[in-house]
Length: 185
Length: 105
Image (cartoon, rainbow over all chains, first blue to last red; front, top):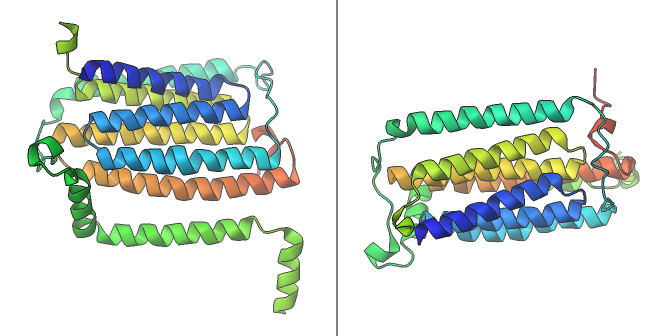
């Protein structure tokens, strides 16, 4: 059963990922991205990361892809790109070689180093079927987040505020920017 | 018989490596800035997947906590990146990655 889930989710992930880079229409690429993100969410559930699977669906598939689609439609860049056109002639073979090389390196590292990972050396993940508490995963993450990583959590909230303020500044129209700086003088 | 095979952490890590390399090739091949950005998201997701695989394998919840942080930073990155892309495309409609060479020395 677990194998079946893994194969189906892996197929979703890979088909979606290939779709992102071969579809010539940006909207189709964004929809392929949704397929990949859902596949990753399924794999998260298969590995007992229930909270992260929910966040993945809400934040990635919900917010980020909708943001992408908004920008595509807002700017009207939704015309198909001609993928036959290749501005730099050796670029694609080179990119394929670099990609295959990276893949070979990573797979070698993973298979060679499989013994280096000592299975179960941590404190253990709380499993809902064992503890009988359906919220055990989120409880464990929350406890870890607010005990060992409080400072990082606060820094991340500052980062989010900076990102929002920066984007509002970036996307203001230049003429309004001039008017407000005139007014400031 | 076949159903008795359980996917191990290695399977998940190899899948994450595949996803990461597809994202890398996408960033290098595509010219549309929005699609390049989506490929960066693919790479981030591959890293998240391997973090979760390690969390399961080692029985350590910190792997999942890190994924939480990666997701928040990815959301901030998308907001700022799309803001920059909107600003560029407003000045130069239909710009591709080749047209953004103004900062080139």
